[in-house]
Image 1 (cartoon, rainbow, N blue to C red):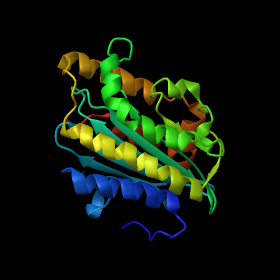
Image 2 (image 1 turned 90 degrees about the vertical axis):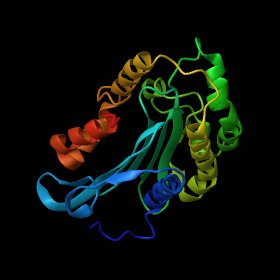
Image 3 (image 1 turned 45 degrees about the horizontal axis):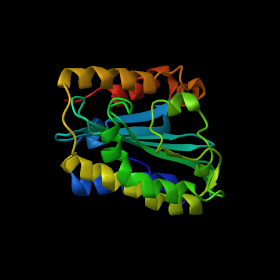
Length: 253
């Protein structure tokens, strides 16, 4: 059983809402761990009784492959990770959302659709996938006071994202997350629509599978964001942290 959540856990509530929206729209089957709980319960490696979060995993139906929700709860930060991975042989993008809450009214957040093809060779793909979210992107980033109006904090990670990435480059407030959250949910709604059909020619499945493996290997490379991964390992240990990374990277289909 998970511990009861406080009303102050607004980052957790935000990501939970994204999960609920997906479960209401697409057929996902959760894969449970012990006692029908989350697939993986996370704890302090020095004190296994001390709760540190969980990993939940759902298997999807084509073109969706899996949905993953990760919570990492430390003394000073409560990190929520959310991924929707399309099947590796498809051109449907992956969806990524994150909220890191620290304090009662402070957070950073990001959301994006990870492209499955390259813009130089497939400009029409980018028009089909990202054109419809240009308006939500501008609504989120055009206000200078919004934290997501700044450049990405880590250009190395941005390389694996899209130019439509919404990301807070400095601390934001709960009110800003509520405001920008409308646009993040528009991104999610668009992803759900893409699962119903993407007007672009399918590509060679073997090529897509190989590219997707390279993409995720690069995106989740510990060297890309060593500070973040060191924080994960400090919180839950190398063994549990490596298992979280494996679950995020491993396809189900």
